[in-house]
Every structure is written in structure tokens, then in C-alpha cells.
Image (cartoon, rainbow, N blue to C red; front, top):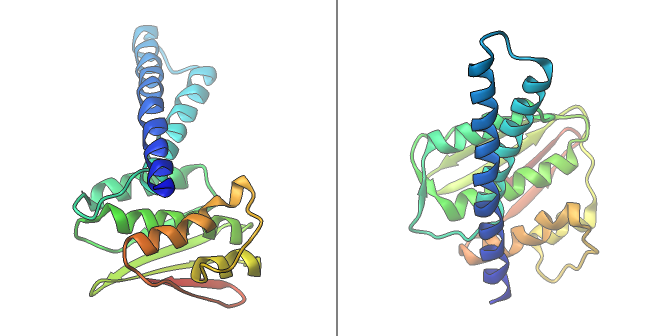
Length: 197
């Protein structure tokens, strides 16, 4: 019950934030249109920040919000979110599934993406594939930094780690895979981490 309540809280926070962020974006657009000239550097900064924040909230809503097996997410929605968050991030993404996929699976992948963010401090690339119901997410970059306790927590529910707020995704992946009836395995090399479920 606690996991479900936490997911519902995540959904509620994202839902309540997305409307005012959208309103700010609309206000910037109106200011730009009424000015008649090129967008000022100040308005450009606000517009870029709104776009980045909007993308992050959409990402968080799928990663931390309530997920259902019956709820499908389209490739277009996923690509839109990943494209937007890569604009100001260190990572780029390649999403290969062409079909709509369950929100439950997207939740696991998005939580893994946040795990890859912590392991690729110099940036890199994340490839996500789906073959016959089996997901593979592979993060690669010039340097891979793996905290063994955190990464063991992904596959071993008995593993306890002292999670910081910036590492909560590691704790949630285990719960998300269990809720989905999935088993996660992780392998890492010098410049690559691969997670499959």
C-alpha cells in the first residue's frame, strides 16, 4: 500500500505542476507575439526553462506516478519526452520500440534512465530496445561510475543501501519490476551498463 500511495502522490504533484508551467509558457508566447520583434534574451531564457521543466515533469510523471498494465504509452509521446530532456542534459537517447507499450514498462525504463544518469557523469548515450517482450536498456559513455551497493539494490530486494534523495530511483526500480512481475538483470563493463527485464 505504501508504494501505491507514493506513486499516487507523484502523479498528483506532477498533475498540479504541469498546468502552471503550461500557463507560463503560454504567457511567454503571448509576450513574444505582442512584442512584434525578435524574442529578447530574457524571454528566450524563460521559454527554454519552461520547455525543460515541462519535459522533466512529463518524465517524472511516467517514472514516479501510478502505472497500470492496461494504460499504453505511444512511441510519439515517449520520443517527445526523451527528445526534450536530452536538449539540456548530458545523455542522448535512442528508443527503438515502434509500437505502443505499457506505462508499467515505461516506468521501469525511465527509472533505469535515471540510474544511468548517475553512472555516466561525463554524459553518454542510452539505447532502449524491446524484442519479443524483453526490454534491454544500454547506457554507454566515456566513463562509467558504478556504486556497487546501489546497483546491487536493483536486482536484490534484500540488499539495503543508504539512499540519498538523488538516488531514490535505485530503490524504486526493484518495486516497479516486482509490481510488473518482471525480473531485472544488470551487467556493467568499463564503458557500458546493460539492464534487461
